Length: 131
Image 1: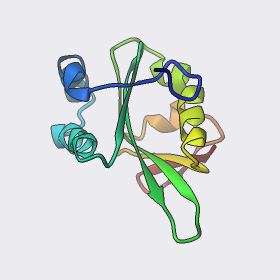
Image 2: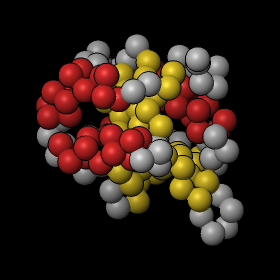
Image 3: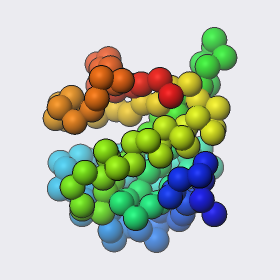
Image 4: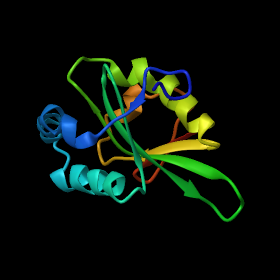
């Protein structure tokens, strides 16, 4: 079943483990990031969304002012360059459909600043944008 009119579908992240574990290692991200994201799905605190480009694990954070942020815990491509740019609009649609007004992700990799467009802002290690 497609989510929010996008190519994303709910998936079992364990079924994609072999395709994503090496990609996470290649990005120099610690593997505990992958484990924590998978645990969040297992504990029903997040959803795993798969598409032809990769895997996204997302959770919703409710704030005291009533707003919601769609926090991306993990986004891993299957290896084709440009996956983020191809799927950014779809991720925004999923976040909107979930009731979020913002989307965010944390990273210690500064290279993202060159990839992201002007809609994104950096606060510490968190990139965010309105949706």
